[in-house]
Length: 101
Image (cartoon, rainbow, N blue to C red; front, side):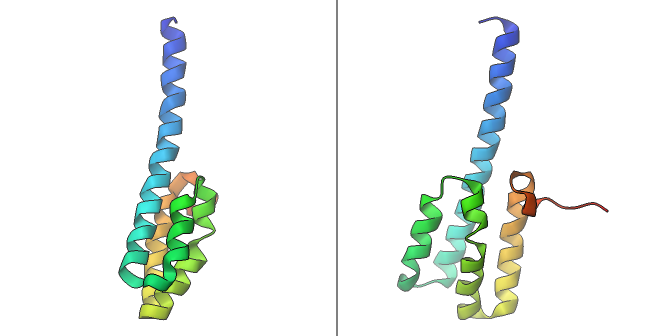
């Protein structure tokens, strides 16, 4: 493998790693929220979060997370938690990207 091939291979790996790192960062944050605000009856949400293989799957679990926190602490706290989680998606999911007008 020449220098050119190794450069492109490393670049491709960095992009993939960055997606995986984002996936795990979001997953960990969501699991912390379920641990803090959920009870044993919310194990199914924990399992869905843990089983997600794509960042889009976690994106679609945000309403469930909002409902969990809202039931435990109210809508204001739920909105705060979900807003922080949403910010973690950044460029890895269109809804997490900040829009500049």
